[in-house]
Every structure is written in C-alpha cells, then in structure tokens.
Length: 341
Image 1: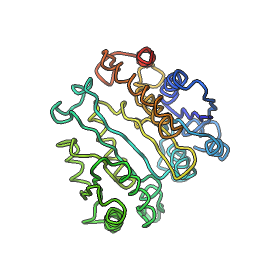
Image 2: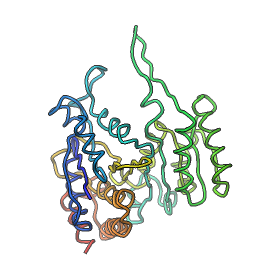
Image 3: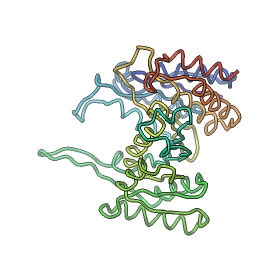
Image 4: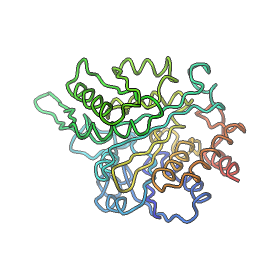
C-alpha cells in the first residue's frame, strides 16, 4: 500500500516525520512518496496544489498531511494563491465530505486542560463535520467596497454527512445549526430529522443552536457522543473541543469520502513561531497516523497499538512544551516508540 506524505508548512515536516517513524514500526510494508502542498507548493510551483500532486494523492491508498499556512503567505489579495487553497483543493478533489475528529481527554492529561478535572473526565466524543459545502466553498468576491461569501447546502450533501454521524454514534447525535437565523440551518435541521426518523430511529437525536453548543462543550462535555455539524461551525467547535484534551497538539483528524483515499492530519496549524526548533508536539500527527491505519487501511490492530503507546507514554510522564513539560519532538517520538515495544 502506498501513502502520500504531504508535510506542508511550519512544523508540518517535523510532525509528519515523527508519524512516519511510528508507522514504520507497526506497518513496515508501506511505501511512501512525498508531495508539496500549501505554502511549500506556492514557493516551488506557484500554486498551493498542482494537478500532478492531486493526481498522486488520488492514486494513493491514503494521504498523511502535516499543516499548511503561515505569515509568509498571508494576503488579502484574492488574486494571489494562499496555502489553505491546497487543503481545500485536496478535500474537493478527493471528494472528502466527512471530517472525523475524536475528542477523548486522557487521564494522564486531565490536569493539563484549562477545565476542571471533574468537568472533562470520561469525555469521549466524535465531531463529525461536513467538509465540502457551506460558506468555505460558496461563491465569494468583492465589488464596490463590498464582499460576499455564500453559504449553500443541498439536501443530498446534508443526508450523506448525517448518515456518517448516525452510523458513528453509540447512543446520541447532537446536530448543531443556527436554525433561528439561517435558511441553510433550517434545511439542515429538516434533513437531519428526516434521515433520523427514516433510517436511525434507535439513535437519540437532539438539535442545538451553535452558540448553545459552544457553551455546553465547556460546561458539560460528557453530554456529547457525536456532534454533527456543517463546515464552518465544525471548524470552530472542534478547535474549542481540542482544549478539553489539554492542547490542540493532541487532536487528530480523518477526512473521508464515499470512495478513494482519505486525508489524515493533526488539527493544529503550522505554528510557524516554533517551526524548526524541534519543540512541536508530534502526538496529534501520530494519532492521525493511527486513524490512517484504522480508516484508510483497515488495520485496526495496528491503530489500537499506536493509540495505546501514546497513552502509555503520557502515563509514564511524557510532556511536550504545550502540555507544560519540556520534551522535544524527538524525545516525544522516542517515548512513543519505546512504548510500542
């Protein structure tokens, strides 16, 4: 099986290299090829994602992405390329409509969270975010001192992500919208309710407005099983949920479609302020590699082995800088490798 590595920008190359070390230890038969994406691709090719890089990703079994972006490429000029276009291009080009972000604070890190231990303990939720619709992919532009970004959803787009949410749930799906204001949210609520009634009546369904959901995430996170959201709301809420784990450096993600390769990446950004210093937390990338094994290659045993090794390393005292310690990227990776044996 062939994996495309897309390290990207900032700390991306550092954490992807760490994740590959772990993959080599549990799945030594994998083959790799590297492709440029994001700012690195802009510098080398003039665009955030070349057709050749996209085609290489289509031909692979899975893609492991680091991070894209940084102040070097920041611009408000709509005519200039931006690193994020590479990520959006991968999602649309590979048909990746479902983003899965598991949020499970580990007991060893309960005290690293800004929330009290008794609030976060036993939290185990999955954020299911629609990934190829909504305001990020709608028509956008500027004219005569005005700007617009169109948010649009079709019934079919909502139906397919709703099914992913219900199939992933143990007992409850919390569907997030802004149905008191937005017409797209009213359609979202109607379609999710219909899919629930017709196909998943044994799963509990509740609807929450996005502002209420944001409050509940920090007040009672144990309440959530599956949090089902549209694109922008999911982007924001999943980053908020990351802090339950103690650091956004702990949160992995999987982006999946109906067929073809998925993209697996840490939720954190490129962190250009610490790039090249060897201090980045590689655990989210390593846990993303576990999701790659599970969802991309159907190797559940290897995925569970990686996740268990991360747990054991943290139980043994591993703490990177973002978790209040001083372990380097290499030391954190070594700790996980040792726990694999």
